[in-house]
Length: 263
Ligand SMILES: [Fe+2]
Image (cartoon, rainbow, N blue to C red; front, side):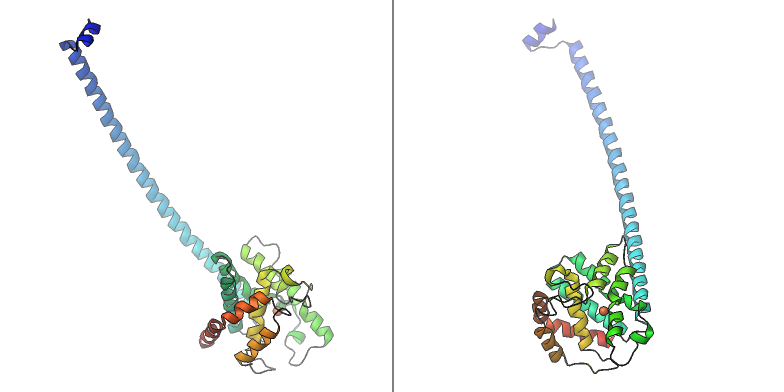
């Protein structure tokens, strides 16, 4: 009897044979399972390879798309600059000053990058200003200046309703880069932190470059004079915190200025 045999610790030959058979079956089925697992594993490796390839293809397509997007924006900016006294260098310099100030203000890397691409569009609304005003060599009359101010709102209209984050940011830049910390700016007379930070940053970058650049009606101011003017406007025209960052990083700003001048 089996019960008795187990109890006694003894197995007869039939039982031994049956156990051996069972063990062999288990072994064979484990081997099959291992094979199946190996096959599944290979399949997974292949999927991972395919995914990797698709991912890098997507990445390069994305990069190409981003490049053509930046290129398009650049050409749009050039079109708006065509009649203006601002040169392409002004756009490059003020964008890089804006990028530096944003970075030193502690903004996340992606926002810093977006500011670099959005800042060039700050004056895009000038495309809608009549040549007689935009290219007037002398001082603008009050009425002409009122028209000139609308380059901010025209720019905002050109850039409105985009799904692209950079264009949304560019719209904020266009409409706020002439606002002043003390509320005396235009077009909306916003003050302090009601002005988006990007507008407060671009405003300093734009004014510093305008001061230190040659224009048909003026020679460039020396850097020290321009810095002095910015410092005096701390808390008036400009956000005091961004002015402090500007002053702390003036050496890098001067470096950027000389780099772009050499291009
Ligand atoms: Fe402007």
